[in-house]
Length: 477
Image (cartoon, rainbow, N blue to C red; front, side, top):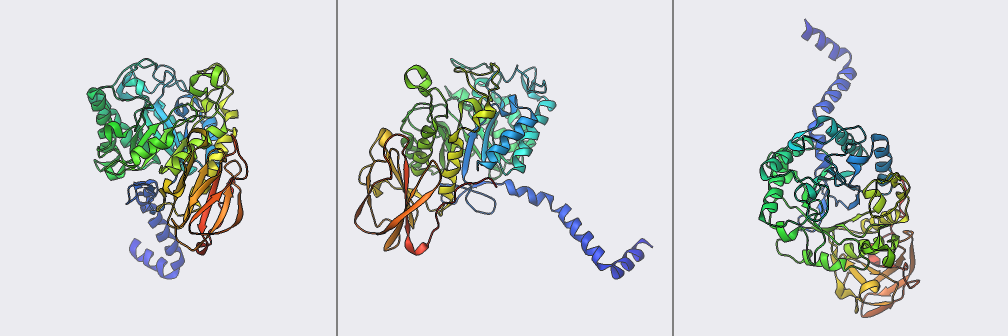
């Protein structure tokens, strides 16, 4: 009787059936929709791709204490600001640095029961869930650090306590991997620590193994993972894990001193055998004590963070991470801060450096990304230190960054075309100003519009035939 009634309904009201069938198909396609968060390494192993094979520009912010210190209302405010500015990744720590095992989150919850990695506290992780889901709704990925490194070993600083061994590290990793599979998560191990010995390496590898097992059913292709170390002379994650299957891209930290040779770190990883994408996961922060010495060096400014970003990217990085001293610790202007008095994070999100990162992204995405390579042969003299000039190009465009506006000479003819259009791109405003056409041959000198500290400029040269438009000035969507 039910079947007969249904057939009569279908023949008499076909539109109703079409609507019902469409709704059914939408519901049953939920698993396929989860693929929207799948990131992967590009075929040339230099970049990261989205699920549609379009390039993913990693523009990160270090919000290390996000899960630990912000309630949901404030987390919403922070994440919305970063999404509006074009950030794509928020780096945050589950077991946080600032006494994250003993100092509860805003809802009075600690992450583990009796500091046991095999006994996660469900109520704490519900808050982490909320932030991960909120980030996803805004188009953001969480660069999730399972733990700050002091929970592996304290060394000379850090709250600890040391709670991990290979067995519980793998179990904890599997728990996190399973809980956050099919979520907008990029996994970042390390937590500002360099392994001291083989035992430390074994623990990190065990945690990586657990994450892969939990998130990807032992399918590494379903997990994107790296390692965040402390600064060192050369390399970073590549020192210990470059040939590990779970390490999809390399990450290093150049730290918080002005004029560090960030480009040399990129070049070191870029030129390694067994090619992998590389990036700086913790460069100098905005409004940070320079080299931890305010008396002699003062605090870093927007110029310092811009300089690190352009030098990193033009040297071959696939992405870049910004940071701010008040924001990483989610300082609340009530005494919860380190390295001197700070204003609240809610004001620090308005510092100019984070907006300048929007212009970085706009520039990089304005031209084909996947054929971009570093190429210092474009310029006759790279200069050094605060006057560094760094060059990169695609097949039909060139970007040259002049750190202090010093003039430079370009060896033309490295890209296609008999003529090139020239623009000056202002890293402070994102505005591009055309200033003529030039023959794409011989040597051509260029003098930026202004010189001196805080007068950095990018020269854009484009094959005239491509008719590329100027990078758009970033605006909130």
